[in-house]
Length: 157
Image (cartoon, rainbow, N blue to C red; front, side):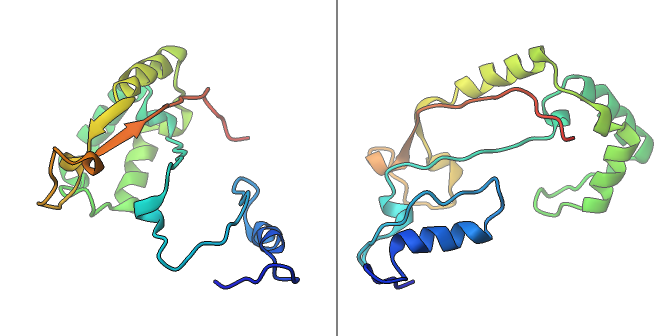
């Protein structure tokens, strides 16, 4: 994308135009001019991610419901390979287990916070790639996680 400064196509104007098309929960805060050699994957100084999980992923109350649902439906309803997710089968499991009513308790969220706190700090990332040339002596093979925040449970209206 090429945008010239000092005209109606300025970077500030670009930010406003992009934000007009984005949903309310996504905001572009700024744009900067870069040279052609810049590679965001390799040169980005930091990244932030936000993940929202259904309550049944962390609620201990969901475990018994899921076991019962899978037992009644048969184990063959589960995908054997993670990337072959059958959305109809997952919807069936959700309905049979009545997961829409499941809520994460304060204790469930506390356990999640404790588990995720183990990932804060510097960690070797070579185990999470298919590349064979990752060298544990190279600093690029490590990632620093500054903070993991688990908020309060959010209920849809």
